[in-house]
Amino acid sequence: MPPPDHSLVRLLSDWLPRQRWFGGKDAPIDELSIGTATELRTGDPALHHLVLDVRQNGTTDHYQLLLGVRRHLPERLHAAAIGEADGHPPITGHVYDAAHDPDLTQVLLEFMASEASAGPLRFRRAPGTGIRTGLEGLPTSAEQSNTSLIFGDAYICKLFRRLSPGVNPDLEVNLALTRQGCAHIAAVHGWAELDPGDPAEPGAEPVTLALLSEFLRTGTDGWQLALTSVRDWFAQPAPPDEAGETGEVTAEDAGEAGGDFAAEAERLGAATAEVHRDLAAAFGVVRTPPEAVRDLVFGMNEQLDQVTAAVPALRPHAHGIRQVFDRVAADASGLEFQRVHGDYHLGQVMRTDAGWVLLDFEGEPARAPGERRAFAHPLRDVAGMLRSFEYAARFLLARDHGLPDGTAEALELRARAWAERNRAAFCAGYAAAGGPDPAAHAALVRAFECDKAVYEVRYEASNRPSWLPVPLRSLARLAG
Ligand SMILES: Nc1ncnc2c1ncn2[C@@H]1O[C@H](COP(=O)(O)OP(=O)(O)O)[C@@H](O)[C@H]1O
Ligand SMILES: O=P(O)(O)O[C@H]1O[C@H](CO)[C@@H](O[C@H]2O[C@H](CO)[C@@H](O)[C@H](O)[C@H]2O)[C@H](O)[C@H]1O
Image (cartoon, rainbow, N blue to C red; front, side, top):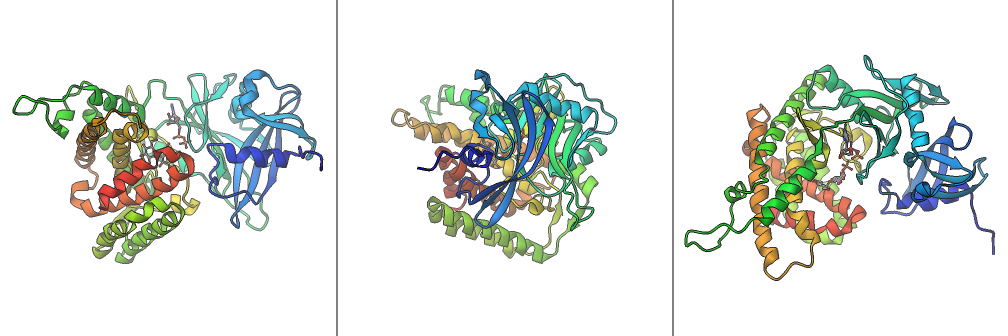
């Protein structure tokens, strides 16, 4: 029997597919190699920055990892362990994900504050800001596409996990919106980037590795706020109907619940329109020719084909979804496109004392980098948020299999009432603040909702299979 392989590459190949942020879970890793390795701190613990080149299905993706190395791994770091490396390449000892080690994450703040460089890595401070050092950073518990470290109550540093060529849209957009004086973003304090240093491509944009932003101390996640409201509404006694008995619930009844969310949904709609206005001012607007609308529908159908092939449960809905898309293609007049958020949902917004703040302008993690920065119709974001209201209303139902007989149907009516009320409030706030009126573009919004739900089918099938019924049920209704 060959001796067990403890090379770092072997350890990483076993560990990587188990990470929530790994985007290639639907295919095996054909080859993993270490693209760049930069020592950021020597000693015990030591810190290395790695870019992993991961080959799957004929394409190579690049993932970033902060690798901690210790002679002995304390218990508090056991959950972050990758294994015991044997010195091939020359790293020996217990290796682990250093995002979980505050002794090492503080190096990031120090490097950004002093605008340090290390090998191909450059650390930057945003113009006109300072960075406090000596703060310990630990990852948030949020299960998302990247890893965010919170430093005291001062900063949050997002480590982009899958790297894309060039500037990350989250940094690009936040800096541009800061210049516009936008009130609905978190201030940028610094970032880290990797100089591609490719002599074949002189002047290539640096690759963004991390973004340091103001930590919104008074912020509450939009998803949590919405779920609290749904739970409250589900717990309300049924309203009496005209005959004095319990009857059907309406969107209006949903407004009687103590935790009603509609006023917040309306404010969120207005904040969204204001950010769209500032994005248009910063990056411009183009009136697309009719062919662009056909390209848009082509892209929607292409994604549908891919997801239908990968997730059989989507097949029964495919014909209906295509008909929804065709209705948009039939109206071939041009549309106004601009930069948008791109992956807009309730987990990307926070309510602070001062109002709603939009986060994470990276676009959908599964989309190609060029596509994420492409101009799009702003109602695509509106549709994203409408999908999120559907998610918030229905996810408790989709996940609960132990409801007493009859309860699921009653709660489904309540879910529908909650979603209708908050969708309407969000759209009203958006249109009143100057965004294109969703009601006047109903076919387009429906197509964007279907497109997003198809994306979600793939996302849930790969990441959270028990959530798959949420987008599938919506598609049955949207395209039925
Ligand atoms: N500036 C901030 N202040 C406080 N919390 C934040 C801030 N930015 C992000 N968060 C929290 O971290 C979570 C993940 O941030 P996000 O930018 O959406 O990362 P990802 O790209 O991994 O989805 C958010 O849902 C929010 O709860
Ligand atoms: O990691 P990101 O925030 O960039 O986005 C991805 O993960 C989201 C889930 O965390 C996923 O959003 C879907 O689930 C949400 C509830 O958890 C729901 O509010 C959204 O409407 C729904 O799309 C998002 O699609 C994905 O890109």
